[in-house]
Length: 368
Image (cartoon, rainbow, N blue to C red; front, side, top):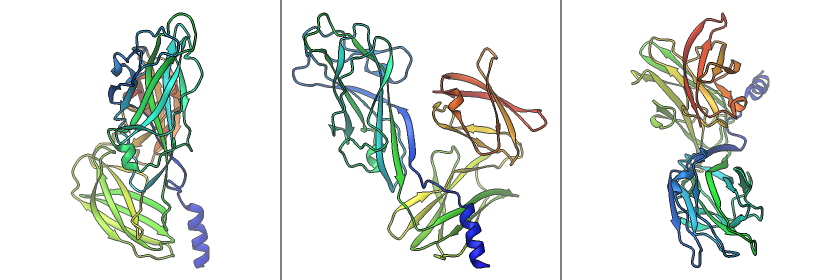
């Protein structure tokens, strides 16, 4: 009987972060120029690469063959890679063009700890006549550097970009950049525990948190972390691990929690000092049945999470501002994959319906 229960538990395991995780793509928030000795030009209007909006950073023009620019340095991407993660790859995408088709890369390197370093990923492809993204690196490429999450999360992490005029080409190079984005791939360090379930339910004046584990070996404790925005979490309790190989159940009551909508997650820490996190779950602490989306704004390549669904199947319809329906989706989980809206940016309208096709709520979502 015991073996049967363990088999059932194994089949029901939720694979929290057992696969490579993706953070981004994100835009930079700080823009500067680093001088390269012998450069022919420097970058102007550097902040214009903050978004893809047809407003550009450029270097004027380069006439001499092989003339090159200073570094355009983009940092402060706002990553929040969890501690204990292993960085497996970094991808930079640069949206660029040159109406004269005479610009190529001079140097594309990452910025670690405020220092331009690592492999140079410059390619020989000419900047296209119209805007297009060029990709550098991949999900398994760390650019010849060793990374920890703090390096990626730091405000001085980013990318440095230098352009060059094609050798011996007539005329002038007139390259420009519209947007720079970075995506980071990472893996959580494997811990000797399997999390089968994690739930939160409002009971009177408290939130009852329950989680179930199996295969605990050399675990230290579980931290219950709470947030009022789904991003910034603080620890409200620490529960010692029982270190049992059998199915083990834990519970905790968050009494009189503040706020109307709260988010919870588990931080699970082993004797090695490494930690990993559960999925984020949400609870509506107010008496209304409102439904909210987060994050908002959201990048159109991210997943959109749904708070306060009350375990019902919902229909979500998305519209542009002219009222044209872009997409409708029946949702039965806590997130929506936005691949169908990948071509959309800006404000869109959503309307949420219950299984009886009755309108529950409507709102606005900002796609980046």
